[in-house]
Structure formats: structure tokens, C-alpha cells
Length: 200
Image (cartoon, rainbow, N blue to C red; front, side, top):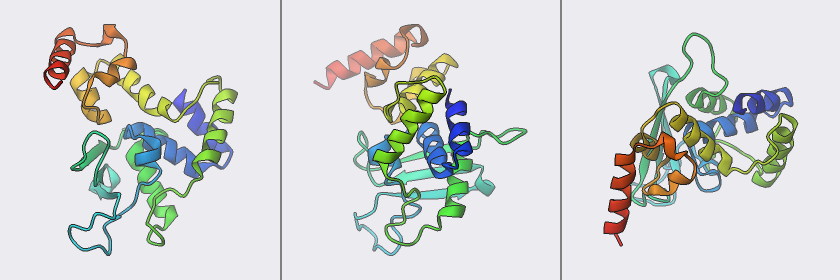
């Protein structure tokens, strides 16, 4: 379904929004607090230790590996780094997060203002997404669908729960709301509940 949505956005000349969706989905970002304020290098021009930045991107291996360094995230107040490798094997993949970031960096010419990678009105973008999703047969869209959908895709592909938790930046069993119990290793589930009960 994600491919259909992204293709339709491109057909509608909504390339920035298409890239935004791909990045949020591939990197499993929280849209309002992580994807929308994403900066190419928020630390540029700031002294060491200055906390007025949000994020910084690092592109390596000719765009095949992209990392996002966050000053802080919801469950990681001391900061976090999210790394993704290009998913294009033989041919370009429209859902490749690193390629979407590299493409947006080339076109956005960040450096003015706060250096944001995407310049989107989230309210208008949400309306566009709902319209496009409805058009392609997915009438109930919210920004959270991107993280939830990726967690479900990973679980269906056999990814273990620990890797899904790490990929999405979850520190609790909250992800279990998005994945089927048949996709979860029961030992990991027991460990998570024990860990949660020990911290109370």
C-alpha cells in the first residue's frame, strides 16, 4: 500500500511529501517531533554543548548509508542515532529512506533559516495524505500509520521483537499494540513484561 501512496504522490507532483513519507516510514520516525523538524545539520554555527539544535544528518558510502543524530528523542533524552542502509539492490526502490533523504538534500538547499530538510505544512500534508490514501484504498490514515505499518511489516517478515524495538526507538512493550502475538517470540515478551514490572 505504501508504494501505491508514494507513487500517487509523485504523480501529483508532491515529491517533497512523498520523500517525507518515505523517510518517516523507513526511519520509523514520530512525525511531529522527529520527521517534521528534521535538520540537515542543526548544530551548524552553534558552539559545542549548545542545545538549540534538533538533528543532524550524516551521509556515507555515496548515499548508501544515512544516519540521523537526534539531540534527544521521546525515549532517549540523552540523544540517539538512527542508521539505515540503502534498500536499492538492482534497481531504485521508491521506499528507500536513505535515497529519499539524499534526493531531498540535493533539492532543498538547506542552510537558510533553521536548516530543516522538509518545508511542509503538516496540516495540509495530512489532508493530502488522507485524500491520496482514500484514493488508493486505505481510507483511515494518520501520521502514526507510518511507524505502526513499518513495525507490522518487520514483524511479518520475521524480524525479532528486539530489533523492532531498536528500529522504532521504543523502550517498552508499547510496540506490542501494533504487532500480532503470533509474530512475537514469547521469551522476549516475558522479558519485556518482567523488565517493565521491575521498573515500577
